[in-house]
Image (cartoon, rainbow, N blue to C red; front, top):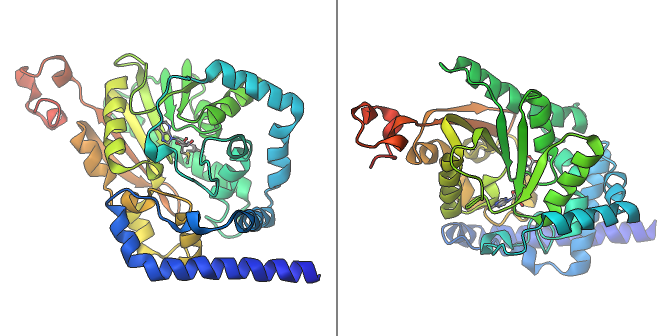
Length: 359
Ligand SMILES: C[S@@+](CC[C@H](N)C(=O)[O-])C[C@H]1O[C@@H](n2cnc3c(N)ncnc32)[C@H](O)[C@@H]1O
């Protein structure tokens, strides 16, 4: 009992200390937003306190019915670890030069996305992400709702389109351990080729391990979304689930440009992420929960200032729509323009779809 009380006290002190720091530096921290620097709070916390904070987070997930330890222990079993390491050996692109923004502490892990622990806990973490979106709804149902809304919104967009295209080749960018990719696979069962791409070799190894176990036949590749090895016009549909709040603005534009290259003419790009307008409204998240999230997200303040609709138009996408997907996330969907890419002198290029391509 005494130990429990002591733990509670230490944790409370930790949170108050960091929260006080946050409030004191809130203004200067907003200055940091435009320089892409990492919010410094996470770096101030000592290792034992970080571990205690993590334990607190895991207990909260448990309260929502997420058995964090059980879900992640599965990937830690020696036989499974052996397979994961083999897969990593096969998939990892050892020549990749990682951008600075990616090698930051993320989500409470000092090594961010570049370690086995984050990969092993990916399934539990993905579940807990949506766990509090709706009152009285279980974490599993919340996840299903969020993910199925994504599929539904994309299908609605396609069926409202003039060409109502057949979706054969799909790319999930920033796929992590494959949870989003698996939902895409279930949502588009007749698609012939589904790829998951991520810059963390640990994460794509977990994705490949799950694909092998579940026989989903999803292909996982380890690449930087800013510059991939796929040829032009490879995909009918590209989806980026919760990628861009982890990426600074210049890299966001480079990735959008690369996605444009990879899409077929009139191919579809769908982006799901936090909606800065909803977050700014502050109605959903308490100040404390919002801060607890922000402290582990190095690029979040620049992301809040972004306008995805404008960014898509700038990259030459047309028919861009934004639709609320769930209480805090929206989905932006647009199409790649077509004729300008072939011939910018084509007189038919004078419509809106050509802006940004022919300039
Ligand atoms: C929040 S996770 C996305 C989770 C997953 N899509 C889902 O919905 O569950 C963001 C992912 O983007 C990846 N990422 C960040 N920058 C990247 C880049 N430049 N290229 C590829 N992946 C990147 C990270 O490694 C991380 O796995």
